[in-house]
Amino acid sequence: MKKTFKKIASQLHLWLGVSSGLVVFIVALTGSILVFEEELEPVIYPKFHVVEAPENHPALPLDNLRETVAARYPKQRITRITIEPEAGRTVIFSLVKGKKEKDVFSVAVNPYTGEITDTRRENESFFHIVLQLHRYLCLEDTGKAITGVSCVLFIVIMITGLVLWWPNRKQTKQRLTIKWGAKFKRLNWDLHAVFGFYILPFTFLIALTGLVWSYKWVNSMIFLTFDGKPQQKREAPANASTVNALSSGGNALAKITAETNRLLPHPGRIQFTLPESDSLSITISKVNENASIANVVDFLYFDQNDGHLLSKRLYDDETTGMKVRRLVFPIHTGSLWGLPTKILALIVALITATLPVTGVIIWVGRKFKKKKVRRDVTTSKAILEKSKAVV
Image 1 (cartoon, rainbow, N blue to C red):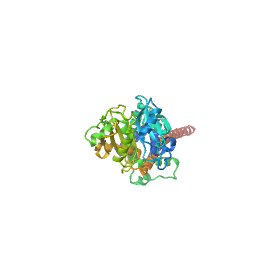
Image 2: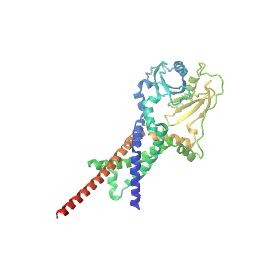
Image 3: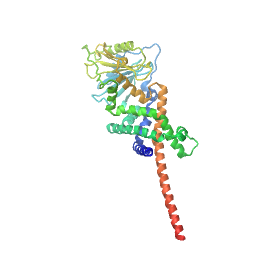
Image 4: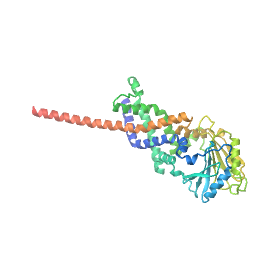
């Protein structure tokens, strides 16, 4: 019974691995690149992100920067404004033309001079392309379906791999250590089996959290499990005033920024989401960099006409389901506890990318060995028959 179970696990591990190996390799490799996206983005695009912060020179009001961008690109609508907490960073304006929310055009502005330092189309940026490859294989809905199925298969592969790895008393040391001085075949097996075992808990978590983006029902299960009801739809409340300060040259954005920093004094990225309709309020999100874990975000809603606060949606007041849902991204990316878990995620992702390669080498080696054995048997039989004929 035990042998039959292991044989079934072996066949599942082999053929599911062969069928999903290329996708797993691509997803793991691109995932390793995305781990340090936040740190590498300003390095790759310094002109877009970095400016010199002059001493004793305050930043210009955000309304002034917005007017500069609106005047330069009158046919496009500003949908988001991103302000980084560091002094030497640009303010990023995200624009769209009409209702094409996917075709985002970003404008970087020096907050001290009001100068536009750089522009780019987001779907052409390096990390956007890597993310599209990671989630969709750059094949949109078809790619999403493929990566989703491959993720499920990979979870089964990990479980069957653990079954095959599980040692008896005599094999324990061999299954836990890599024999670096061994021949290539043995070394390759060790790299696949031993490394695979050590990273399994982390890879399993990464794959499991990845299903949230692949399948809506997985996302829904989080809220049903922890809240006992489906996720509640969140919408920005309506404006209370009627005069549009944004279009009439007011200081609503500066007022909102000051009030946000007063209510949420902790350091963190601030993002303005400007609605398409003039009747809806502005949504402000601010990351709490002082929090013990990543992805702790508070939301405030301001009247876009006069800039007064309409409502709050603070992280501490969120449901358990929403707090668990917010953990999914930092667990998946390794950003949960900052640099230590990011380094761990990078190592895990790189090792995961090697598993399909070492697995295929094991498979090819076994096929070659079987063919060689068959040839040797055939040759031996032919020699035996000739010897009999001579006699």
